[in-house]
Image (tube, rainbow, N blue to C red; front, side, top):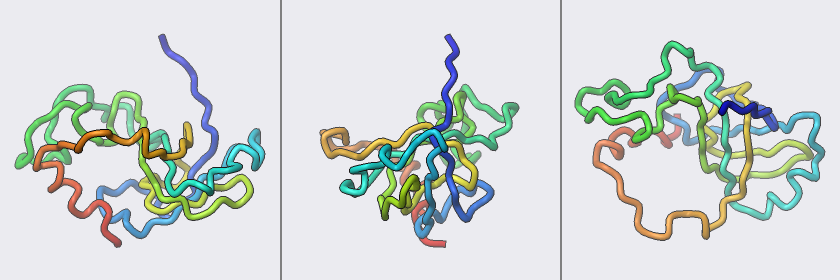
Length: 155
C-alpha cells in the first residue's frame, strides 16, 4: 500500500550533482521546513552523530534498478542485488548516512560528511546511539572495501 511522506527539511550543500567519491571534507546543513520550530532540534547538539534519511530526488525513474548489477558498473566486482549495495538508483530512492554533528543553529542542523546534494529532501533525523549500532563485528565482502576506498577522502 503506497503512503505519502512529507520532507521535514532540505539539504543546503556545496554540491549540486551526485558524485561517487570524496565526501570527506563536506559540510552541509539540514534546514527544517517552516512547519518546525527550533524545538524540534532541541537536545540534538548533545549527540556526536545523527543519521539522516533522505531522498535521491534527482534519480531518473527510468534508471531505477530492482535486480542485480555490478556496483558502479565495475565488472571486476560481483553482480549483486540492489539491496546488497548502497547505490542511489534504488526502488524507493531513500538514502541514509550517519554524519558528525557540528552544531545546531535555530532550525538548521550543521553536519560533516553528509553525502547528499543541495536541495535534497530530508525524510528524518535520528540521533545515533551506541545501542542502535551493530552489537557484533561488521562483516562485508572485499569488493565493498575497494568501492569505498575514496568515498570519505577529502576532495
